Length: 583
Image 1 (cartoon, rainbow, N blue to C red):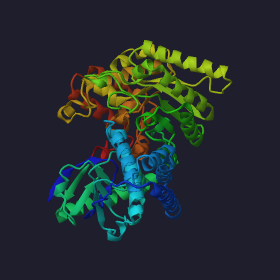
Image 2: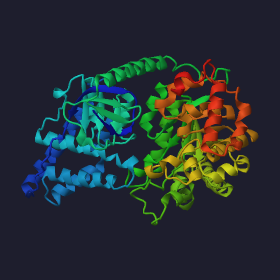
Image 3: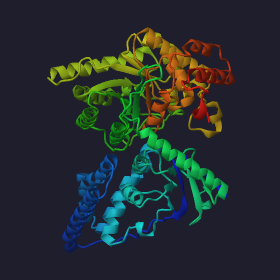
């Protein structure tokens, strides 16, 4: 028996036989054509494009796929129809006399390398969409069969370097048990589809060579590891756990339409965090109260050129229309840190996390900022849109950002363009200085949203992606919890809403603490939504509020843990304390 660590990007348990799938090598011949062959190569190009688009449309028509899935597959059509792509191929064939296969290879290689070199794990994953389209085209030209389905059975777990989005639904319909990918992150299109379909999935597997073809393996997507060749006792334990999870998920689906209320009838807004527009379908399916955090960086980081006002306006408008009148909080551009765009050449910074990022970037590049603000304002008449500024560290920064927003409002008025003139303007509380001055800041804001991940990171001076110091990155740090409590108190004092949108919002160990402190809005990843709703409905949000101020008397992590446990045990509606939630 062996155990391998990876990154959990979905949920669930899978038990089955490892089927290692290796990509078929594509050999591209490099030779030049003569003038008489140009028309034939161009004709072959157009026929290939039409054929692959027809395959995509047939796939969408014939397979029962999710809206998210269809939206992602549609992006492949957009890649194939991109005028820049067509112009590049024509130039390579006509001017450089490359054969069609070589022209396609050169274009996609350059594009894929561009995405991979963005030095950003989140958005470099977009390269897989281009790899998928590239392989589709070349395999069509070479008449290579790409099917891996014939060799799969219901008892299999697929082991691959990565999987194209176009294959995820197909393998799911073959009822495979799960997926293990050596590459991929939680925001890759393939992972988004797999997660929506409920496939247990682990990525970033260390030491993949330990897995052998047809090994019996278990995927524990709850904790992020793989067990190879398990004992019968381990298989039995995980079989029971899998059954329990399936039963729980089935029960959770029955509470989708129930209101998120505590046991003492206090209403809580349970919102969703999203990274990409395609995720809106899952949000709607969960009957979420809206979007508490829409990260807009996708507009900037997967393109070689800046997005136009019209492009952004259309995306915001479409989401707002789908949400109807539900909350839609749009966080303005948060470029910087580990998020670097191809069109942006920043000054070399020793520590980019403490450099020109978030609102600092927007205040430095006001043209980019104003384009986004104008797009949001124009979309605001189509729904309940709110604007949120990231990485605010002082009142001066907020007022300067608000001044630029006011300029955009005046411009739109002069252009006779409609917008919500009372659009709510809020700020992320993710820097300790913002939490400390939150009383004064609340006098200028319409709402707060506590970004707990960065707030903790900056409070304890720990890079949350650095495993060597990860033990210091704990939500039980008393200074961190004191900053949250102070922020909430100041928001309530100034009569403005305050939400929590970081990872602590979905951590049930802290739910009672947050609700008793006065938090009425939690914004979480869609995968946590129903489970958290069920838990909230078991909490009395007033039983332990008298103990919240004790956090200011906590000096050690152990002190904080004891207080949190005390609040949990007092707050739980069911007798017997934390029962299964503390297991």
